[in-house]
Image 1 (cartoon, rainbow, N blue to C red):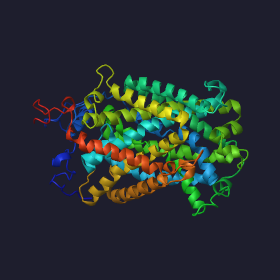
Image 2: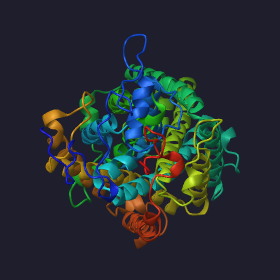
Image 3: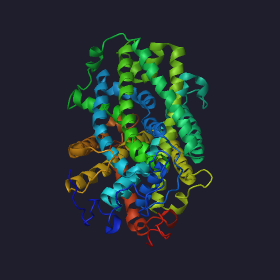
Image 4: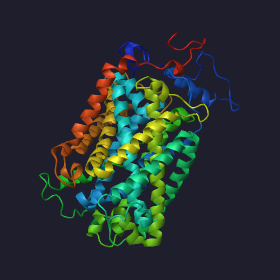
Length: 554
């Protein structure tokens, strides 16, 4: 596509920056002062210099330590998706509402999310910056769109942190009853209270690790992902060796569901598809660590695609072989014990418990990745003075080279959300379901402005980096249609999702619209009347102009 001129006449076709100023220029190979940087022994410009220069052209000075390599960024993306965590936590839901045939939702969701990921790859190559979704929405749609996208993503991330931490209860207690510290599990609130206790311990651990710097987090995360990948492949092999039926029997078995649905089995399938939609997101984390990665313009797009494709292949095979290996495909335990039940029944208690311990590792690194992504997002918004106490939240520890305050704040909010689960499990279930919708909406606040820029002829990928070429427009259109359709499907007021137990309440059924409306309108009202009048890159975080003054003085 031949790039056009932007609304303000920008020669590179960039959308206008906030305030009508010309958008950031395309990162070049030369230095910020127009001179070529010093050569490496191999003859090329130092990677770190180019990375920092690209960040400076976006208006920020480099403050975070670049210590992450290719595998670290890939591990961050795949640990956020966390196949073992997602499949073990949600398998029961898919089978309960769609039968074994719910498996088809896995490739369906992958195909839709792949379109979104491809758009993100172009953005990651051009804007390798912390808080990726926020900065992309801001660059494409302007400051208001950026703030709303960042706010939705930040709120959802803090809730997601609590929801993932809750998975400890589902897995650890199945390994050994010793982990049921609160009562014996038979009391009315024993399970919920114990889940909060285990989840709080996990979030506290994640807070400490993330506060001590990205290098420590990346090492633990990468080791955990390595274990998770080995365990996942081993699980596939073990389940494949235990199959008792063929794939055709599994993939056509609906358990007779959908008879009471107005849309028949398709309606039941749409509900069951949430089990897949709740798993396959968060791949943008690989880009959100761009300011701490080496050569992020090249590595981040690759990490995004590798994380998503690997998750699809591994997760799809685990689900398929689990359904083929379970002794009784009609067992009610499939809808209560989930994948944990399948593993223990098919592989035996010893091997099953080893696999479940690997699931515990997967849950742990998933929490680390979700927490790390939230920290970078909060830091990015605070650096633009787009959050209360922005100067404090954007402060980078000189000792650890990471923003410590966001780690503590996000951890504290995550624990607070967990506490809701003790006496109000219905509300907790609603909130955690809604968090996923908010992430899908935040993605839409990137793909929709990107589509608008394409249609106006204003979008140009980074030169020499990842590009969709002539496929960019159709991919972007599908990404927007998919995101809107899945957001509506996720938010649909189903009793089995938003009011599955206890007394029926209309406000729970419509919780997605009410909660998201309150978060979006309430947050945006504060931004519009208060925060937007203070918005601007904080002095201590602005890029320095070549002659020394800050960019605002140049």
